[in-house]
Length: 324
Image 1 (spheres, one colour):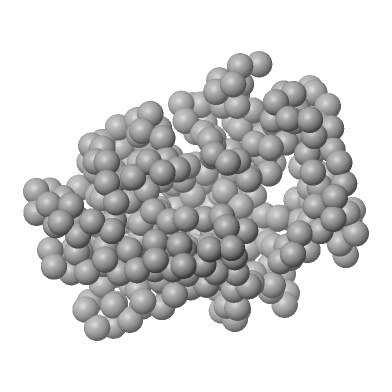
Image 2 (image 1 turned 180 degrees about the vertical axis):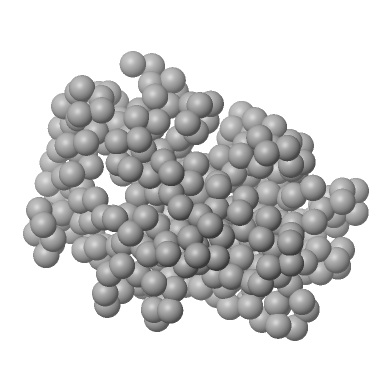
């Protein structure tokens, strides 16, 4: 059985559905601060928090868990700047609590949801795993701290791990059963679709004078189904005795905000009203991830991450969630 923390959240729920679809038994632990219980399509659900040592001990004692996939974290960059204590307490201290519970119960396989934010403002593109990690906000710093803690636990206690540094997760379940639903919504594609649907007046483009092909930020968007597949491959790799890994999950291809808007208008057949606004502090002009190491070591290659497929699945889910 696999314990998925934060498994009612966006990426966690898709990963849970993918594992269950492969015939794996899962238990989802989520406090539902940001997750949605209805997104847990299969497996056992436990309402609770990784800060609760007694609950963790109960879960590990009553289930034969052979791996933990850890998604549970706060992930709002701006909030992390305003309230870093919240991020270090939840993301770092609570992860140590989870790791210690694993050790108490002899569970040694750990797959961790890190982030490209650990790289900060990179010196070149695409970003490869050997580049220096210099996070520029507490959110990225908290994830980098966990990466280092996991490596130290591996060296001292025999933990096996796979650390994934994501780029921009996007899209929805290809069967449109679940999708992206954040409150508040800060991700660009749901915001674009909200604007197309008339649920918000416009999309704010933060910065149109970047040194990019059209002046707007360029990002690497990866379909959430491809992320789920990477986690499954990591689980299989560790279960067969494979070495511990840290890997980027990116497509190697960048899309600008203006290109994303144009693609959304094509997919939806609707106009996306936009408003240009000032740059936001800390937004790098370009973030593109190299996924070649994941391909070489896990056989992972994005199958759904072209822009139109991402937008088609996201739009189908958005219409299901809010109506056309």
